[in-house]
Image (tube, rainbow, N blue to C red; front, top):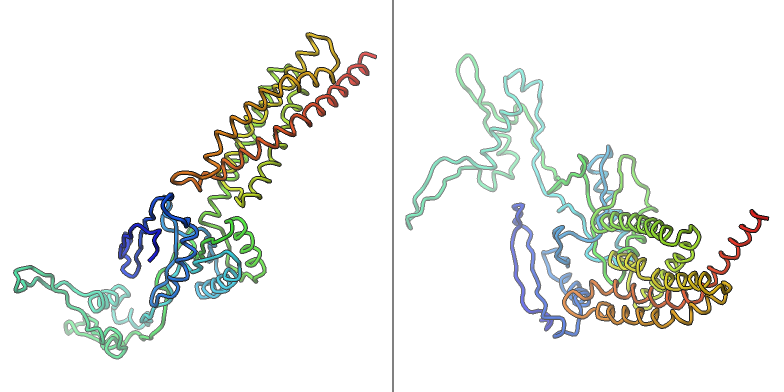
Length: 436
């Protein structure tokens, strides 16, 4: 019913053997032929799916990590017990539902299913020569069935023949209690009913039990809608932090939140290493430990533009924009190098004062600085606009680079000469103090 959809492809079941789940791949028409974005269409489809009876549906974007949700709060059982873990998972899910921007909220478990619990009287069974494996071997054919032969149907196809309890007998406790167990005695083989050595009760248990790091775990999962992942995750953590965590339960993060934290740590480490290597190279080139500091003052100036540009356009500080910041570190120092290098040359070759050298450097180097800046902005405009397939994903990179280049260019022409003159004055005063 949505004109933005080209076609759909449905799959019932999963590679893990699940028969009560399925997925639907929705192919959209090319970006230039539709008015709604992928995120907008997802927001429209979610309430439509919630009205479908008998199914719990959610929207996700295909990724190499699989069809997982963006936020996964893993509740690990370290001694609390599965029942306590389940009750606390319900509390956490209720807290997540109160966070604006959290969508498709649910648990990794598939709820409880009815089951029959056989409680064996082990001392009595031992005296009768019946082990737990004997009871299990007797119950398995009754429920899973026993292959007894083949049968050729009227069409000529050979079919397996499996014998097991009738459906009503598999749920009737009285019939299960009368299940015969083979018993060896001096007078020969005999049988005793299951009720003689065990009690059978009806209970319920989890349909699936997930493990993480050898601990039983229940994950509270959610997707993000209308807000950034970091904002929603921060609000969820604040809500969950107000809950009383039962002893024996530990909370860890998974999904894209965990991946994002890991990647951010790697990027920050790469940025620190890049700054260090840049400083060392400039020290070698200029033969001074002080001049590179003046040049690198442009780095924080570019961050002002990055933040402002992302705020104005409504983009978030994500992995792509962080990569853009790393890219800026090599670009914005270029303007400072042009200014400082020419000022040093003018002082040495013309013998003029520091201020006059800086003024002349600003006048002569202004044109190449503006030319390279405008060329870079023009090259990044298509990325910032988000044109083409997957353009929205790369858009924050272009916006971060353009914003950082603009502010660093403007402020570099004002701040870098000022800082250089101040540091050069301190250096001259220090040298006079030493030689005086």
